[in-house]
Length: 214
Image (cartoon, rainbow, N blue to C red; front, side, top):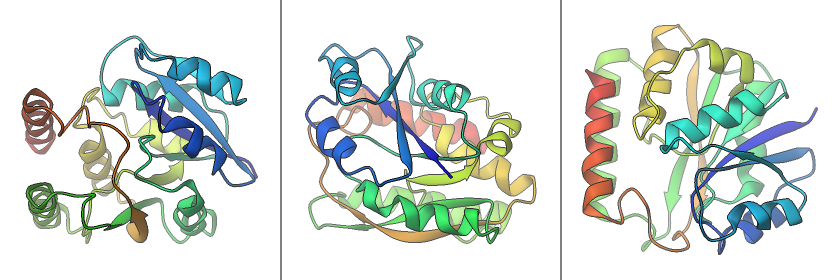
């Protein structure tokens, strides 16, 4: 069974070749070019990947466009900045394929320089609040995920920016999904983050996450 992997991309020309080369057999990349100006879309096409263009800015917009374009029953979503290894995808997919879980997140086992302390603290605080509100036991709102495509779309996730990942878990929990996590490697990303690499990105992400909780 082919599993399509949605890869939201905004100027990831440096990381894309490595990510695409390490895609396991049976996993098909769906690169969503969210307005790149560094040729990311062309790099993905030359590598044989399916490329979707989404001009509406926002991480959630890119994720939704990728899910809408995908056709496989099982899908994954993961960052395409070189911080996550596609070889870990099968570990994420296995519980869904085996009907042991409905949504699986990759809990990041981070290299020392990959995940600054303040971001770890913020992530942990979100997980504590998520547990308090929903009972879902997660240690990380990880950016590598697997689920069934139709079920994900049926959740009706509304956020189209940085609140998308949190709203997904909140809606899944509210729908009675079995949500779990498995450990995955997490390395220092290639280039500067569009979210936490700038003050504006950090503020917008915090605002969107807060809106999802509200």
